[in-house]
Every structure is written in C-alpha cells, then in structure tokens.
Image (cartoon, rainbow, N blue to C red):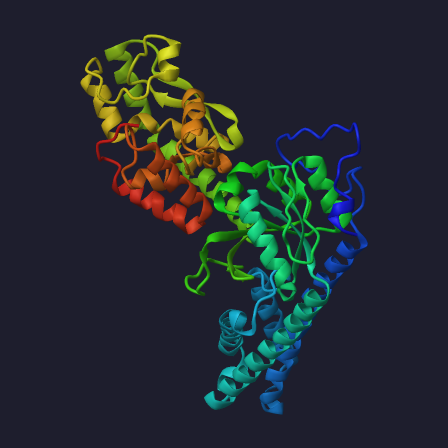
Amino acid sequence: MTADSTVASPAGQQPAPEGAGSVLGPRGHAAGRRAPADRGARRSRRVSGVLLGLVDGGAALLGALVVPAPHRYPLVFALLALGVIVLNRRASLYDTSVVPGVFDELPAVCGRIAVGWAAVVTLSPLRLLPLTVLVTAVAVHCAAGCAGRAAVHGGRRRALRRRPCPALVVGPVTPARRVAAALLRRPDCGVRPVGVVADDPEVLGDMGDEPGLPVLTTVQDARRALVQNGVETVLVVGAATRVEKAAVLRGLAAYGCVLWELDTDSPWYGLGGGGQGAGHLAGFSRRLLWPRRGRRRGRLGKRVLDVVLSGSLLVLAGPVLLVCGVVLRVLDGPGVVFRQERIGKDGRPFTMLKLRTHRPASAHEAATRWSVANEQDMSRFCHFLRRTSLDELLQLWNVFRGDMSLVGPRPERPYYVAKFSQVHPGYPARHRMRTGMTGLAQIHGLRGDTSIEDRCRYDNAYIDNWSLWQDVCILLRTAAQFVRPTGS
C-alpha cells in the first residue's frame, strides 16, 4: 500500500490540532493499527537482536575450547559470556535500528571481549595459564564474535534490500526532493520514502519511474501515512527542521520511529566521528537523533548530581547566605530575596530566587530591563555580591526543587524569551533541557551584556553533545572562575 492512496484527508474532515507533547497520539490510538509490514519489520529486528546475543555466547564457548581441558571451568566461562553480553548491551550493540558494517563494530566488540577476559583471568585460576594460550583464546573469541555478528548484520542488510523500510522525510520541499530522489535511485540502502512532511502543499514529482510522493501538511496526514504504510524510519533534513518541527518529531519518536538527521548541504567523506549511529545514507551524512541510547540513565544521573550537590552546597553556604541577608537588610532595608519569573524547560515558567542587589522602579522594569550590573545607585556591598556571584547562591534552592539544574542554559524572562525567539531561530531550542545556574556559554565568558546569538549557539551545542562528564567539567571551570567579575 502506498502513501498516495492513504494519506489524503477525507472531505470535510478538519486536521488534528498540533499541540504539545506527543502530537501523533500514543501507540494504539484510535487512528488505527500499524501495518502488518511494520509488525514484520519489528519482529525481524527483535530476532536479529536475539541472534546477536546467541552469537556472543557461542563465541565465548569457542574461546573456552582453546583452553586446555583441565582448566575449563564452566562457571568461569559462563560468567565470561554473561559479562561480555552485559557490556555489549550497555554499549547498545544489540540495537538493530542501526545495521553497521563489519569494521564499524570491530573495536567495540573486541575491546569488550578483552575486558571480559582480563576480568576472569585476574579473578580465577586461569591466571596460571601460559600467555600464549590466553592470547589465542581471546583471538578466537574475537574472530568468532565478529564473524557471527557480521553474518547477522549481513542477513538483515539483505532483508532490507529485498523489502526496504518505509520512511517519512521531514523538511523543506526542495532538499526533501533531493533526499527522496536519491533514496529511490538507491533501493539497496534499505530505506524507501513514502511521503514528505513539509509546509508546502505542492507534490513532489520528477522522480524517475516512481510516482510523485505526497507532501503531508497536517498532523492527521502524517499520522495516517505512519499507520497505513508501517513507517518506522523518519529522515529529518537539516538541523533547522529539528527545531521547527520539534513537536511533530517528538510525536513520531513517541510512536516508536527511529529518527535520523541528514545533512544535504555537504557531502560525506567518511571523516569525523559523529557519535554512535553516525555514517551516511545514500551519500548523505547522517546522525541518529532517536532513540538516544543511554540518555535516560544519564539524565537520571544528572538529576542525582543536582540534588546531592545543591543540597550539600545549601548546607555549606547557609551561613554565608545568612550573613549576606543580614547585611542587605541593615544597609538597604526589607526585601532581601528577589523573586522573578523565568522560563524553564519546555517553556514552563518558574520563580527564580536571588539575593536582591537592585530595586527596580516597577514590575514592568523588572520584567523588561536588560541588565543592572553597573547601575550607579547600587551599594558597594551589592556590587560585591554581583561581582562574586554570591547573589546567585539562592538558586541552589531552585535546583534542589527541580526548577533548574546546576548546568544548563541560563533561564531568561518571558519578555526576552519572546523577543529573542523572533530574532534568533535557534533560541527556542535552548528550552529542550532544564535551565541551569551555569553553562557552556557562561564558562566561555558569555554572561551579562554579551551576544545572544553566541549564547544560543553554545547552549544548543551543550544540549546536542550533553554528557554527565561535560557537566562535571563545566562545574569545575565555573568554580575556578567564581570570583571573576560578572554581570548576570
């Protein structure tokens, strides 16, 4: 069944409104059941994952057969096989949404096999064996594992050539035309586009012998194409599309689709890492957007880090905050704590806390005046608080509550969020992650009255390449710069 006959909206039917969250509706929604071809493809992926696990277990058995009979301890080699499988699973080597080549996986597979052998040799009687025997066993284990995985991947690649995965292309019509035409010319890549999600209602034509692909302009059309064609792959053309179509893409991801970003502006030369799942599709550089394997565990670690550090720092900084509050009360009167509405993750407002260093003339001034870091009517003590960033310490309570994170894009007032979002296309994408007390932009000097375009670029780069270790590094660099003059 092709998209041409299935995605057009019935006469008189209103398109579904595009809202926040899962736009396309949850799995099993009344929109209908997924196509049988989709269920078959998912079953094939599950079978491939099971086969990869069996291959890893069998490779461990072959490696054990190299060891002389008196030293073949079944429990030791069972633990070896289990350990390697666990390591491979943590590295997402059983995720068949990506079909890698033989050499793509070789370092990861062999490295984990070596780690597994090193562990069992250290902790078992195998350490008494000659080094040549151990090296041979590891080599056989690696060769068997790589050969078996190559066979599984090769079988899946051949299956994809026979029955390519239906895909939706999301992006502007002109670059989407190039991507769709290239994929239709190369059926061996394993992906066949069935429709384009774009704002332009024109129909893609001039695709050789293939019929023109429909341009889907409503959420209702996209949902119908996804369900009736069994779509499980989404190709996002360009980084700008990732921001403009964020709501639709979240819905597609929630429906179980695998999202790839394709770069149509530059050719792929096989250079540069690009992370897991990177490579090319019909010559277009690609990057896996979803599923982001390991991100959920990492985000949980980020929250744990926030709670532990913010709680500890609140206890340690309590006396300092108390002294600062008393001095402010004596010098400048009541109203020590300054509360201001800021925009957090996914555009949700929250009340951010600071020590008051300046009294705005009105609520309107507080909401719309950009910076007061160098105001002449501020007392010397308030200047000291701002210069040392001690006025920001109360935000540790926002972090502890979950309004903010220790590291992330700095939150801004609603007035400026609306203003900057109109001028800088990437500004709304900063709110994909919880806002923070410090961030990549801040440790590069982008605080106070500095370029919003530069801040936006650094913030989005931080989110795109986020890792828990990067947070730790930013916190350490922030601590080193803590007493530098700032104006936030």
